[in-house]
Image 1 (cartoon, rainbow, N blue to C red):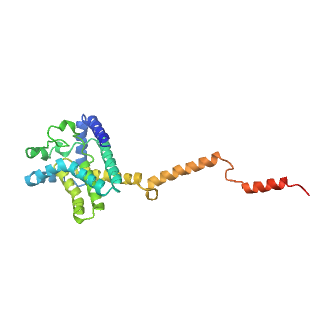
Image 2: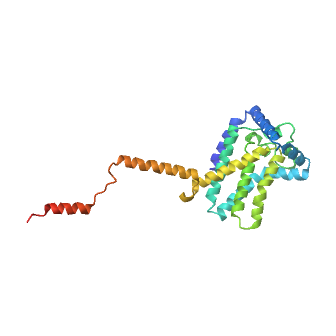
Image 3: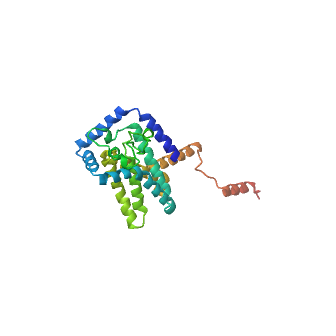
Length: 272
């Protein structure tokens, strides 16, 4: 399954790598939309974070490592400690990722760090870690990453997935606190390092919600299936009943074998 997701990601990367002008235009439109709605906190947060090394360097480490590390740890925890919830959680994560890949394919968007007025925080503090300026920041691997995968933010989508299941399934208070704070932290990191817009964060939460709903519909027991699964199940069963009745006219009448035996015996009895 993970191999299939990697192949899909590589296909999307190869398809959109040549669309830099279009991706930059999409990024400028998203930023203009945020300014029209008075929610363009991206330039301010990027400037404030980059100007403070004590915050910028940990933010770069968080962006470069927590995305994969925390997600794998939560997956392992679910598999070992919450096996009943693991299939739905895994399916939700896969669907969320596939929806994100569809977004990268349909709407390639350049991150804010490629636009005027922003600072590439990870590039500015590249000497402090192993990251580079790529979307998947690993030194020397920029050519293997999709530079125009800003919309939606799968960093935020995966972080919200971790937080959602930690809040729902953890028994102690401190994992729940971590689950509630982790998506907020990642949202601030991706915007502050100029890797995503605020609307990318909203889109990441949206694809996660869609993934969770779809996973519940696919894996829930019949009495608890979501409405669209119940609708298609009823439609299929109803068409099957109609076809059966149409192919067997008169099947609703049934003859009693006992009555047939009695009638045949009365016909064979001799008349005195």
